[in-house]
Image 1 (tube, rainbow, N blue to C red):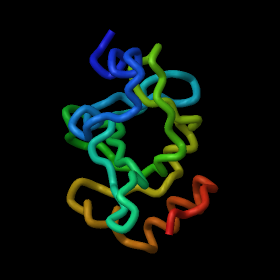
Image 2: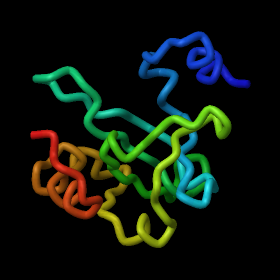
Image 3: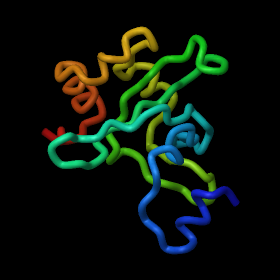
Image 4: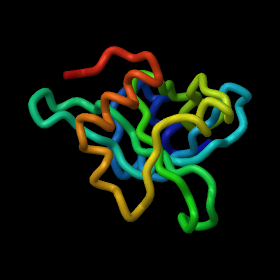
Length: 124
């Protein structure tokens, strides 16, 4: 059992951002699709709005970055990571960006395309 599982076991429902970064993300088939690289936090409301998930590549090289609305993820203690009801095909067609274009995650047009694609009500 990893540390995240132990915090849930003790009834803690908060977690430090450094423990979220690097956490595995699993798709609808419960297969690993990537890992969290960052969380986006609303400056006004102070809540997590999105997570950046690195998919593919090796040691971060050649990977694609996807922004997923936080509401799409749920923590699965059995898997020891975040579960998202997404298939590999859905993710392939989803909005994405590269490591060299990280600021795109903050662009409102990009964010709109993400929320529209995943059919989630935007937080703004």
